[in-house]
Amino acid sequence: MKNRPFKLMSAMLLSLAFLLLQCNNAQEDGAPSQEEEQIEDLLQSYYQVMSERDWPRYQGFFAEKATLTTIWQPEDASSPEIHTNTITEFLAQTGAGPDSQPIFEEKMTQADIQVKGNLAYAWVNYEAKFGTADQLMEWKGLDLFSFIRYREEWKIAALVFESE
Image (cartoon, rainbow, N blue to C red; front, side, top):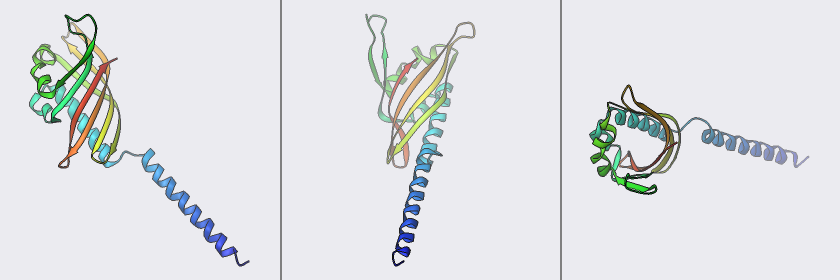
């Protein structure tokens, strides 16, 4: 009989610990955190601004020396190669890319975002359209964003992408 209060207290503490653990897991598995929502909002704006071809605003999403990387085959190359540009180099080429046709649009269809401290990443599926009304190319792709938070602002440090 002496141990009954001890056993009851132990059972209650064990139950409380289990409930706290479940609540913690529910946050991790449930609704996105405020930071994840910030990244998702940033990504929605990113794709909108890019589709509008507002290149000065687009550049504002990136850290100063951010890189954009993909596998690409230049016309004079015999095989595809890894192609990396800084954001400044990428923007200098928009005349031969997105700005070369009247229709250019990319739209986020799904994002998997994870935030740890001042770092975050996002795997993003997107759909794209490019060309003219008579000759419109459509495709899907995958973007991998690396973000860094500096002075309370999220910036893209690197973007790696490919078409499906």
